[in-house]
Image (tube, rainbow, N blue to C red; front, side, top):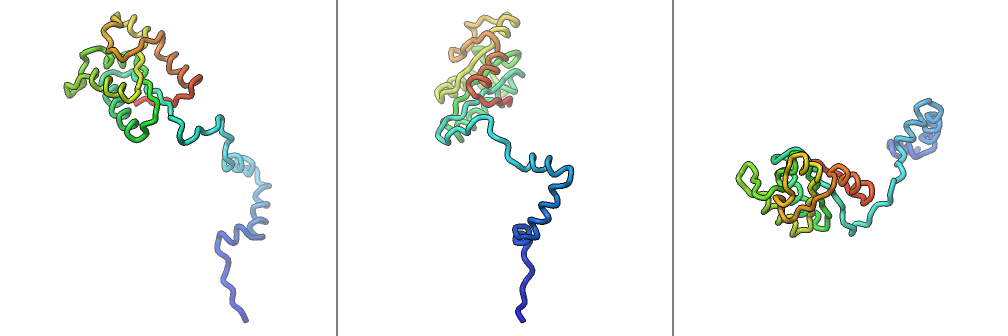
Length: 169
């Protein structure tokens, strides 16, 4: 007489008995919903090849501390993924870091960090609505900053038309 060991859970579920149990579950009301959740959703857009650069927009709207975090994130981002295309869009009180001479809480001049990131290909955009609202002269901005009509419209355009991923550090 030969002794057989019971099938493993994996063997059981992949065997005939497992199929019968699975078929029985299909009649339950939640089965269709569970199948939708379990099935992978079709991709909205095809995945970019691994060699394609990732495009990221950094939204800076909350002042100096947020800008300092965004700088640290961007430097780390570029170190990890040097092929990344990053655009900072500054509006509201977030525009302060783009004003020539502005310093972080440690006394570091933001213009130096802007220049450093710009050498890595990072771009900086400043909201003209904010400049007008705060009565700031665009000539006071660091050289690397480009003025755009609206910061929020620029963020939306980058996301919708150019496929940028949104980050708000």
